Image (spheres, rainbow, N blue to C red):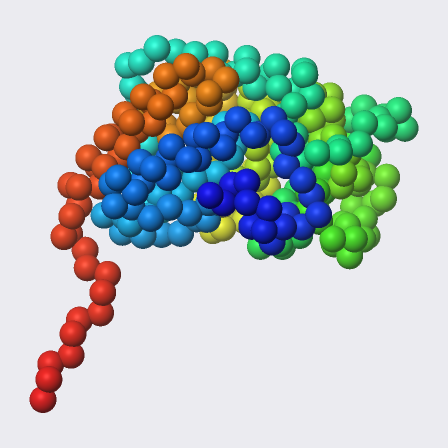
Length: 300
């Protein structure tokens, strides 16, 4: 299993450590891997790719302390969120769960977030940046400059914990040192204070902002946004933020969404069973539609 494998994590996040709050998801990972094998599927942690509708790989990752399961096919990922919203199922209060995560200071994915907030004034706007490995690819520099021009000193830029000192230096040169928060400070404190949050389709801050009733706006490069592992849910959050709490609760409560949380759901295994039945049924409709192997050469 990769989600809690120390070697895998070191390669992905370096010296950072995941919080113990995520440990409960290890049992979910084990069950999802078992279900994948039962359905002759490969499985992959925190990877996004584009396979054919008759996909061969089930991807999974964590998202706002939930377990997120999705096939490596963009059509099915996006359809699953729509189908979940339209599903007739018991509705749980996932939005309140997210708000409580922030209140109880368990929303951070990584440990040792700094809490020295006294020297920072409140500002109305917060820009949540992706890590160094994604920043220049995902975030639109022209949009970031426009935000700074519009809001002046009344905005904070929050670097991702996985951001190099060199990149932070560049950000300070662009937007001014007084507007750049430390990479290791608790972002959620400033998210609560903000009236509006600028973020990306690859950030958990989108759903936390919507759960808190904050306005959100994307900073993504347009033709890059669909490549993120959270695109299927986040682009719908941007579109439906006017009814955000209801949207979150309806989608996350449905087994069709691919979201699972043992803290809220006693029957999480049954929910996973139902998810695989749903997604495999969609997959099977496309069997033999497309061929992904090169044609054999005729022997002379």
